[in-house]
Image (cartoon, rainbow, N blue to C red):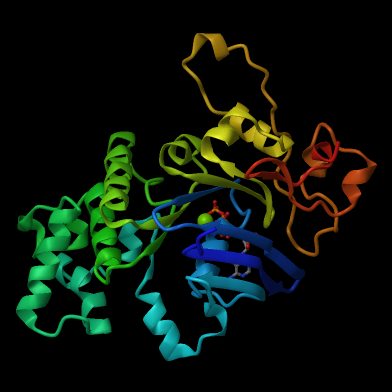
Length: 317
Ligand SMILES: Nc1ncnc2c1ncn2[C@@H]1O[C@H](COP(=O)(O)OP(=O)(O)OP(=O)(O)O)[C@@H](O)[C@H]1O
Ligand SMILES: [Mg+2]
């Protein structure tokens, strides 16, 4: 098996809060190969953004490993980490708050190039900015404009150009299209996929939109209260959901297919429980229609079919 570009092993990120220890990311493992996209889905507060930030060491992990090309970057000292970080970038949901309003578009895109010093001459930086703007579908005329002069889609293109400025191999995309109109969403998703084809980029794509995740992912990881409850190749997950939580999530997708209109829906009652000092058993059990005594024990991921894993007692039989 080839070494994955990114691998997480038993990654944990706990926050100390006045009410107790909050298990935001709890024992998460996965692999992302070069040129692939891992879609991460789950309800608000399940730990998706914390996972993305911990992978990039924007947050320090509580324990576990993050391997980049087979090396654990969590043990890297600062200068070495700075070097690796050039290969790992992030784009955010709201490009407006993540772009400095006082800088022109060209300065925003040029900033990471200047910080890492990969291109020395001013003309070289200017040429690179123009190239990045073209790649991201931003006309030249925006070069001296400011973020507030652009619409949401174009601002997200600037965020992407800035992320691409240091030629990364891996980008964490944290809800990058959630704030955009549907037609603009499709343009940005297609741009991300084009870039992946041309440059072999890998993505971790965080979203709560299952249609988006279906469009863009190679594999999908479903999270619930900091835990991975199911992990499978995209097509497999949309055909067969092994975990009741995934079944409920996917049955909530609206459909225009008349044959599927009468399909059974698994409505999700209640809200995600508080992830502070959680009990050791399945965290979905309080909302699960199939919950039983055995759900009080911890549930590990088990392979239900090749490459398809789920953490549920129903998968033990
Ligand atoms: N700095 C922090 N200190 C304490 N708790 C935090 C911190 N950051 C996140 N959390 C908590 O960790 C949990 C996971 O948060 P996170 O933002 O990762 O969720 P998410 O899945 O990205 O949600 P959303 O879909 O709303 O963006 C939440 O319960 C959140 O309140
Ligand atoms: Mg988030």
